[in-house]
Image (tube, rainbow, N blue to C red; front, side, top):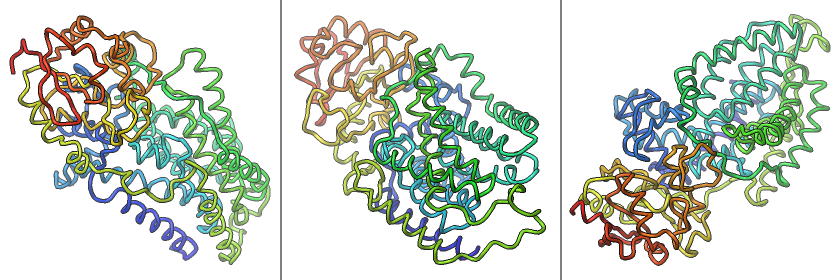
Length: 553
């Protein structure tokens, strides 16, 4: 590997490893969504990879991976099986979190190095892809800290798709078959990145003549990707009535940092003139994805198309903007075999050796990103102590071993958790600070307590989840996060006004024999006061427990 490629890549990976050791360590995380993602891996490892495999332990039974992208769970189970179970299920999941954190950096580096012609010129953009948060589900905060790991893995595949498309863009070659494989991987890992993949392939197709024939080839590649994912997408489409769109979150936005990148991406349009066709595709990519995101937000969502919300499609616009801004900052070293500007390939002189300008441009870009990082939420450069709790530390702090034991000894039936999450920081009650650090560790009750549960997980697309959140299981989208309802409402009713008779009717229909709440909700959860069916029993703090005394126990 050439020095101008090896040294910047080594810097990038070294930084990522140091951050990872400080934030991720060697033990599975328990912050926010991580326990639920770990449970889905357990589901595949124990019940098999069929998307329609029934999961009886969440939400009164549901084909868990039929209505959720299975790619992350498949990858974790594959690690578990390939290691001949030497890697436990939690260890396999944690390895995936490591991979998901690191992946956007190297994939962006290799793509930009191919387009720009220099590893040093690729360094600022790849460092930005590795550290970006900016409110995206795929950034470090959303994709690694919060636990939307599949979103980040799919995000990392987009630059990899650009890398495999560059030869097709620059020369008269067939479309690489690996492009269809990457699009298929995006679909089963996080379909919200599919628009980014499709737009990139379309731009690559029209980058050179014959454009009509190349568009037909691109369409054939997308059809192949659809065929490869039909085992999941076809049953999903046929059974769409049995799921609810997760359309929570506000409209996408750029913020000050995003607008800075837009200005740099504008410079990329000018620099692309001397960079060849691949550079032109990169320069146009961010603008095309911005248009697609706006189209989704202002045309498709108002028509009721909520399964690919604009605030998720926007993640694809962010990675496209990162690539375009990288071109704008660094420029490209020479031309990329554009016949309109250079001599035939056999007459092209070797690319010049890396000079000090490229090194300075690369390092200056990284230093500038670090300088603007104090802007809240733009980049995540270093983990704060205590913000990345492990499963073991949460288990000790919340005395989960005692809770699991109490649930195992409770009467048979399902366990209802009044909240979706358990706060890790106490202070505001009544859900006034729903965004405070929390964990959905109760999602692991089927594993550690051997009890089926209702609620206690991250926001879920099942009809029963809709019933818990809003009081009906109708077909409308779920527009609020489960955490926003914690400590405020249950079955679509405020906790203070949920009466025992109504509560007992829901509980009977769901087969509930145990109710677990938090002690801070006790004063508002009137449904369990003087309840003729559920009697309060002792539970380890911060939990309170009520049992169906008609079921015994």
